[in-house]
Length: 398
Image (cartoon, rainbow, N blue to C red; front, top):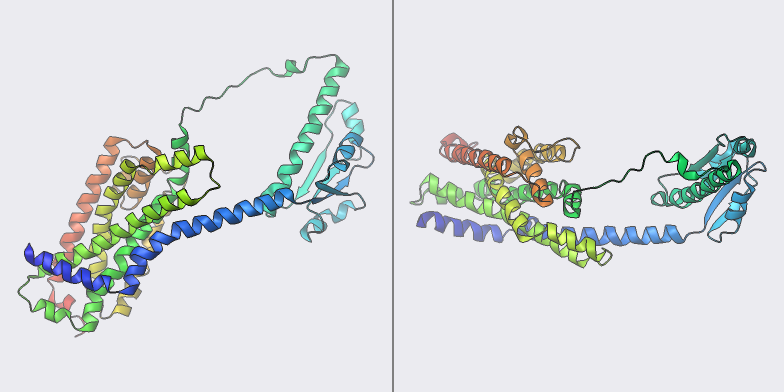
């Protein structure tokens, strides 16, 4: 055991001297969330405020109809109304940004309404512009105008408007705000945690395997009194520590990012901080620990197989896709944690993390995820140990 600890300390010191490893393990996980969230929130708030304060240019074609609606738009200072346009040029005007939107009434609109039929109104806009705020500002005006027309109809017919309300639906959402928000962001957060866990393992694994081969220090280590198993465990422990540290630091970065965003409403901030409570974080990290063992064993095996640092990068790099795919599947609707998905590596961590963050994890399924991950970690560690014992692997290409 003392020999393993000695090798662990030696490899940890070498790892901490590597600038690339420190950047991937400490700097990026810590800064990514605060910087990314800060930029996104500030830009989004600025754009929304700019779009809401903007005086939008509206094309209006009424053909002499809907005079009350026309007067309503003309009296608004936040709208610039243009009526001298042709119906066949509406789309081109919007595409060229000459107009933000166009409201087109059918030529028989007033007659249709008078005959108690539906009058046709067409709203043209570009949903990709201004976060779709233009539509959001115009649609309520049209809806209010429709309500006025309906009220006028009932008054003419001397009827109570409530006679059309045959059913009154009262919805009761028993899901707490924590569950609703947790389900929404809970699918995205494991994606980042697993990715950081993988990236945290990758550079130390490459350096402690192929890197030592390239520097010629592996032979010196093998000639020491330490056994192959002790050498593997020393290197392996450093890689696992790097992976779980990167994931833990990314969680800390997320916590800092949430606290620094002043634009979040206080009640929403309380819920998000409740999601990031100590118990949930510990449970998520406990899932990432066996996953880090699996990543470390696989990457260390591939690293020691490679002849050089560059070859190890080319072999391990594409594994990002293999890792991302099951995590991406967890984001899809309908993919839930059950007896089958709890056995699928990486996917089970993403789904279980989502349930933990939402506070809806089933103890039986969580136990199944733990067992499957522990078995996978044990098998991968055993395979890594056997791989290190092969001379043709250790000295491939020598």
